[in-house]
Length: 441
Image 1 (cartoon, helix red, strand yellow):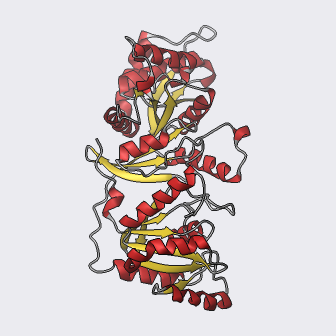
Image 2 (image 1 turned 180 degrees about the vertical axis):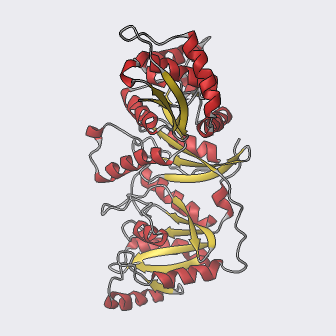
Image 3 (image 1 turned 90 degrees about the horizontal axis):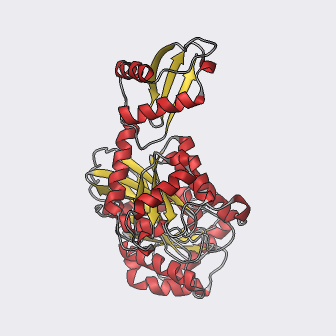
C-alpha cells in the first residue's frame, strides 16, 4: 500500500470561514493561479483543496475549505466537519471575514476558533478601498491579533498578509527535498462511480468528500504519496456527465477541469461501476484519453458486489473488448474502493504503464523487426506492385508515436497499418498503452 500523503510533512496554512467571504478568491490570488472554482452562489467549495505553495522560499501547503454554515442538510454538515478537521492540522489558520457584513455564522465559527487563537490570523476580505480598510479594524474587538484587511479582487495588502504568515512558519529554512519524478494519476469516471472513495483509499485519508449526492466533487483534488519509491500525484476530478445534463455554471467549470486533467496526467484511471458495466459516457471519456495518448486503466469498482463466478473477470473483459474494441489494449483491474481490494494491483499497473510510456526504441532495432513483419505478412499488391517500405522510426514518447515512410502512403491499407501497430505493441513492449502510427511518403 502507498505511504502517507507527502503534503502532510509541510506546514499547512488553512483558509476558513462562512460561504461567500471570498476564501477561494483569496486562495487563488495567493497561489497566483486559479485552482479553486469561484462563483457567486454560496457553497461552491466542498472538499478542502490543497496546493503546494512556496512562500518566500519556504515550501508549505495552502488549503481552501468549504464554507461554514450553521444550518443545512447532511452535505453541509459533512463540509463543515471537513473544514473543522483541517483546523487541527493547520500551522496557521486564516479566519476570513467580509468587510461588508458580520453574521451569526461568523460569530459561531469564531467561538469555535477561540481555543486555537494562537494560530489564528484574522483576515478581513473585500476591503476594496481605504474606507473599508479603516472600518475593517473594528474587528479588532473580537480579540484576535493582528487584523489584516485585504482585497483578493484587487490584490490589496496581500504582501502584509504573506509577511505575517511567513513570520509564523519561519525559523530555519527547511531543506528542499531532492527533485523526484512524479507519476500523475487522474481519476475519472461518471458521477458516483466511486472516484473519491478510491482517492481516499489510495492516499489513506479523506482528501475527497464522499456522499451519495451526485456531483459532490467540484474542485480538482490533489494529493501525493509514495508507492514502491515512486512519488505519485493523484487527481480526483468531478464526474463527467453528458453535456445536455450539465446545467449549472459551477458544474460546467468542474467538468472542464476534469477534461483538462487528462492533458495533465500521465495515466488515467477510468473508474467504472462493475455492476453497471461500461456505459456510452465511459466510452467517450476513454476516447478522450486515447486521443491524448495517455495511459489508461479500467478500474472495475464495486467488484465485491458482483456474484463471484468462475472466470468472471475473463467474461467481463471479453464483453468490454467486444463493446469497445478501441480499448482492447487497456489493462482491466477489478477493485473495491470501499474495502481496499485491488489497490496494490492498480498502482503496480500504473507503474507498468509509466515504463511503457517512457520507452524509446532504437531505429535500427525497429527496422530489423519491420523486415521480419513484412516478410511474414507481405502487404497487399496495388496494381500488381508491392509497396516499398523505406523505414519505421519512433518519433516521440508520452504520447508514443511512430512514423512509417513508404513509397506511396495511399497504397498502405488501414488493415495493414493495424497489423503493424499490433506488432509494435507485442514485439517492442507497448502492449498496454495507446500508440499512433502515421504513414508518410
